[in-house]
Length: 466
Image (cartoon, rainbow, N blue to C red):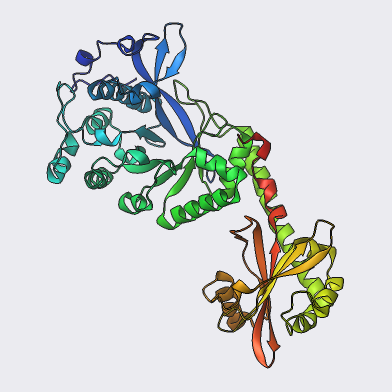
């Protein structure tokens, strides 16, 4: 039997004004819709986000997001709408039988975290003292609703919008801690929109980070944004937070989300908002197909990278290019005979993907200029010398430290670095490092290769990006 509406909050007294008072196109009372959130790891729906909806005079369902953000609607009226939707969502959550196994994501404006008094007050006061706020939290409407319906806070995720965090941030941080102490989890919503602050992650340590989809879509077309997204995902993993990408409408957006390390997905493609919870928790077959496709594509990409590196290194050692580079670096003239002759030993793969060559010593100091490998408009190849790079300290570069570690453990004399983004060209590259003796001293020959062709297939078709 379904739970009855709450009796300890004077709900009906303040719900007599219907939505038509705020928008002539709307009629009746606000109500919740539920959009599923799927877990990639569990391959099932693990929760739902509550979305406020209203009905038009023509019987169509419309989002109340614009109304709740409108400056023409008072904060008091917004709070009434918010509480009405939240209570009905919690009632349905309990009645569905999911409240012991699933999670409900509730959008709560930071202002309303301070709403710790009964909603019948015509002029509600915001609590401004930390101690008073903490003391009153257990009397907040949300806590009372949960108690009434017998729902544990451990199944509720409070979504706080990142750009609205500027309202008394110290107080909100404290309130977040108080809610978490009661068993709630926290999601930081729209991370990456506007002027995001990384210190916000450290202050509230959210269990979930919902990425702004506009930032995601930039990552589909620009490598720099893609690397930013991967860095955010790596940071989230180290903090113990889970990345949730919302607003997904196309299959390529799922592929991009998986590629940066997202673990949760939400959007029209994975499940439309509905007035009730879905009967089953298994994810749709089309999403499962995409997950399998991504895994196979990623595996193929890794195999292609290893095959690519093997082809480069096999050619390097079989053609004794180390000896030829010894002669190459005996003169720093950009296109003398040795530098021209070595081109004849390069395979087509080398000529297509080699970008630069340079020497560093055992301390990580670059001892030569950068010799950049360039193809002219008439398809001839030549070396362009960059003296500015000589003398750089590269000892803190990941590939240098990795190489030193491998020398000690594996007694190796060459290896490939992890892929990295070249800032100037936005190409994805790897560095091949080979240790040899040069003028009776240990030197490391570094060769940078472009591998962008191995990564692009995972990303959104650029023609679809506006």
